Image (cartoon, rainbow, N blue to C red; front, side, top):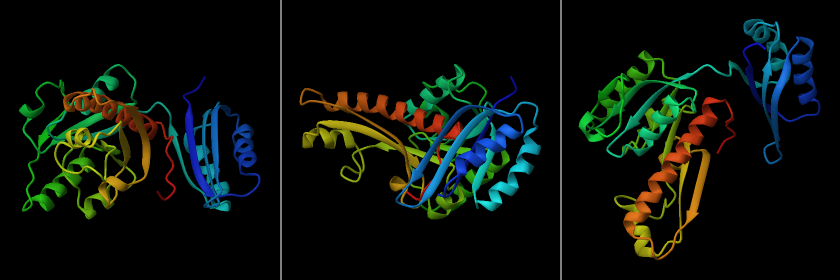
Length: 277
């Protein structure tokens, strides 16, 4: 078996797209290992992800050959190695539970990523409980007066380390419109599910005071509306009046970590195709 490839694509829906794509792969000796498609009736769009063994066909030749079909059907498409670890830049503030979870999953082989750098607006001591190993750590403090310069440093760092994805692992700073636009489609954020209801500090305490009976988390791509970008993954679980604010915080940490990790996994495996919101 050869190293599997992933072909992901989207275009205007029309009859025969699946047949054209699968025939293209068959004619070149490819063997489909997994295939998923979605026809979005609301927008008239077609989405497809195919994981396949290319046989004896080379990736660059397949890419070159596929251009004609893609041009004919006006596709947005991507052909990539399934197992290639994507380089990621992780940003964090004082709450490091999501960071610790991501690094653990990476170390045991659950996430196909290569942490290239960790950025925080707080010193290394703020996340002293998390083992970073030899991953470069960058302390880039930010204030209202230095925000523009600090964000420029982040962009330069992401470029220099070859980061393909930026993960906001409870990075408690709002990105500027310029920063959000620069990382569009390749920056994932995590937050509790109470928004827009409970903003600011101690949202779980606010939820407790209001008698909320369900808590959860949302992971999404970052846009200018920081907490309103396209949602990738969500989860929730019921709670009761017996749960203290501290219990809500504990359960919230667990849900946030799980949801962010799953969203990152789906992005890294090319399982997310953007369709507006």
